[in-house]
Amino acid sequence: MERIVIHSDLNNFYASVERILNPGLIGKPVAVCGNKEERKGIVLAKSEEAKRFGVKTGDTVWQAQKKCPHLITVPTHFDKYMEYSRKVRAIYARYTDLIESYGIDECWLDVTHSTLVFPAFEPKYREVNGEKHFTEEYLRFLGDTIRETVKGELGVTVSCGVSFNKVFAKLGSDLKKPDGTSVISVVNYKDVVAGLPVEDLLFVGKATCQKLNAMGITTIGSLASADDGKIINAFGKVGETLLRYARGEDDDPVKHMDDKREYKSIGNSSTYPEDIESINVIERCLYVLSESVAARLRETNQGLADTVHLWVRDSNLNSVSVQKKVRHTALCGEIARHAFDLFKENVKPPFKVRALGVTVSGFDNGSSQMTFDESFGNYKKLEKVERTVDEIRKKHGYDKLQRGLLANDPVQMHNDVKNSHVIKPANFEDRKKDDEE
Image 1 (tube, rainbow, N blue to C red):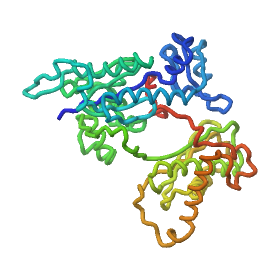
Image 2: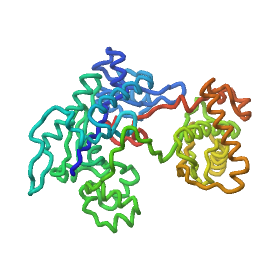
Image 3: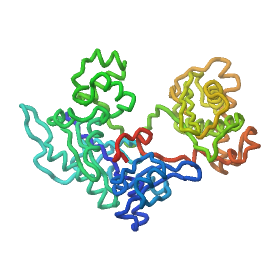
Image 4: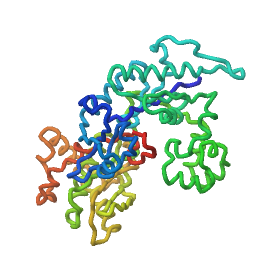
């Protein structure tokens, strides 16, 4: 049966919530920014008025103010953003229980079998070339119903893409912003999608786009009609996925709202108030980050990880990203040691480190078999200790129990990265267009 998938994207979400908290900001150019004192002073969200001056997500505060001299900058209120995100999802749940989050500000909804809760609308179907399809008017009506309900009850706007799969629904939600509904149907998708830039397709990032462009593929239509062998030879298995997405063959289901989230990676990063030039301080910072990563890994029940990734940014904003395969682990100590080894191997002194990130991936979901030495050696004991530390911190506070390594570093002793991290909208690091907020 033909599916009806809606992708909802809350417009300028953080800035919209700030305007609810402070109506005096309505109609003015506003940017929600990180803390400049902690050198996290970048634009996380902006209003439509700020966008017209060219302010973009990821701009530094000074860049944004140069573009828009009258820009009003406000700090973040993540508890309020989460509150409104939950309220929006509660509205979605009136229409379907197939709700899959894509960050704090975006969701997919499958309403194929849930249309009875919508107001009556006819005609729902029409015949095209002997086949029965949903009418575009009906699909638009479904998106408009969601959009208008959210705006009417909460005062925030949402753009909706309505299609027969997740990829095209996501593509549609980007076409009419803010506060619009776009339909990409089984009948019209070739006309709507073919001429769009290939980078508009979900998961086509900068590097993939450049590679496709070098092959003469600049639109989604040209990718859809490309030779399979040519694409698969250039991109491997990813090439198969790209071709399916471009041709509208995505059959990935929308997950149930209660399904456990599947993680491809778990990580954390910090930008530091001052450049770090000491290898000892680097080690302590990596342990703090690894504490948060290991704790999150245990919380999400993904099992053990077999890959550790390190990200380093220096004072000139140059970045290094490296990784290594390791024995399956969920231990902070092991993750930190691997991250520290990666740092020493890839960053040579003198250095001035502005930011660090530690990530793990390659989860076994509890399926790995431990060796005899691992099962009866220190691993199980250390894992039990770390879980006990988790419980003590949850009950009494993060800094009530710390590693001896951090004893001489009061800043890192109290640096609870796990519970003070920035909640970013979906695809924050790879925003490609001004309005993708």
